[in-house]
Amino acid sequence: MSFAPGTLLDAAHKAGDHTPADMARRMGVAYLTAYRWATGRTTPSPRGLAAIERTYGLTPADLMRQEATA
Image (cartoon, rainbow, N blue to C red):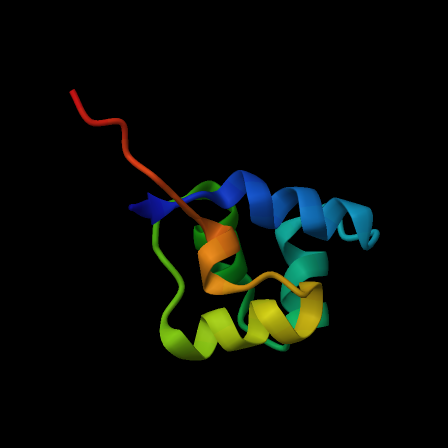
């Protein structure tokens, strides 16, 4: 499983947040943190996952994608 930033971005856009700065303000996290999540550079920590769930209603399971197995 790996973090799927597209799900986060879709939820943010639906809420009217179109930039990492918008997301950071709404979630109460640093701009760089939101930017790294939005670009998939880092996976949210447990505290970050809680902020995403509070803000956008996405559970950790919503934010993870299954890796294809061969």
